[in-house]
Image 1: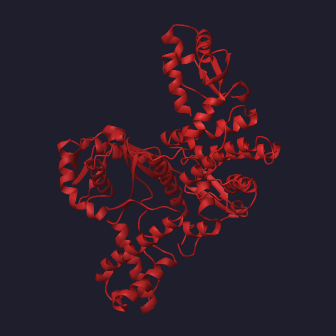
Image 2 (image 1 turned 180 degrees about the horizontal axis):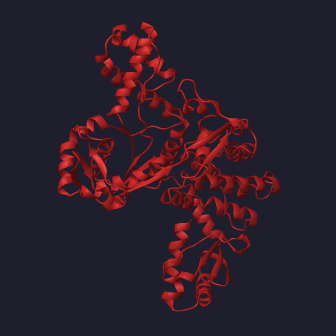
Image 3 (image 1 turned 180 degrees about the vertical axis):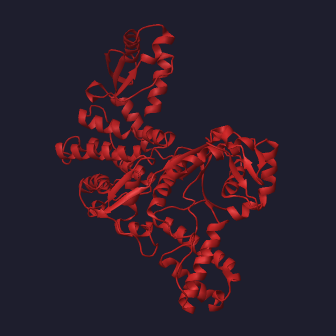
Length: 524
């Protein structure tokens, strides 16, 4: 509705305008501010608003106009709403005609199970993928596997030490950098079943145990993600990409991006906003962790995406400048890389700090929380605030079956509408509805809000703000519940007219929840 209306008004006024929602709905459905146009049109905003108001009043799609200061407030006609409602319910098959986007997220080291902090970035990324595809973008989701370097070797050492403890009675003291928790003992037991006890007899087997542990952890990570409805298009191995290191380094050298000092190789990242230059090759000739990320981002840009989006933990903020510097030295446009940050979460249970998992050692496992509150409640909660802001919630609140639980509240609105259709003996799917001419004000306001759905989705995606979808669904559900409690619906003269609007409300809730990764309920 918003885009159709905006195109109509832009054509009528012969100028690019911006529409917003009035602070008070008594002024109308939309407001057109004129302040930013004053300089170009060389008129004061009040004069522009009066002239625009006269033009809009002549359009058949506009029911009423109310000029207040520099604002043109207006309401749309029932006929226009009828056309928008028809279009809203029409089957759609969007084609990928916009940007090709590579969206990388989670990318947790495969050295242990996913904790609840990983879940926030995972759900945020998955929702952006869904929104982008729905809006016609070609979005590819990708998980970067950090399977090279010390962390994978330390996983193998940890499994080896656990095996020596279990089968040879040795101490279970882990050196610095190794991993603790019951899952390491589980991996040692699985390694014994796969390779036999002899795999713990000599340190030369640590490499084999590293690969085994990494593969097992990656399987578990994929299972954990699937538990909350997340499946990736691609998995890219850091280890496999390292064969491109020599050619990557040559490309950096051609871009005058590196220099040698103190027997180390440095990238000139300070030239692009980093606080200092960074080592990419150590004295022993071994590439650093940063080198692996440089190779990976070169690989991304070689695949000719229009945009690359990374979702990283907030503690990686300082890492952005050095990666963007590398991209520039490689000869690519770093503006095509967008980095979004995801904050950690604080979890409570009954007002107390949520208990850490013995299995993980010192983390709250994603799997445990998802099993306790369900994927739907977890997803909606994690999407309820901007990803880069602090989030604290109590799992007990998410178990409540009342209006204090947002996923219950929104689902209840959807289920209530389906129940109304059942009681009216109308089939929801095949119901065609009837004319919306002459609908009352409260029903019209509800319809306008429901038809704002696509504008909300666009704002949510372009601003990388899925919380806008959550806010919208809560507002739409609230308006519906209010209407339900205030108005008689069944066995009235305008029952079918009301149901026509409620079908659109239900469709917006259904599609909105689906884009959040939640299946709407038709019965509660």
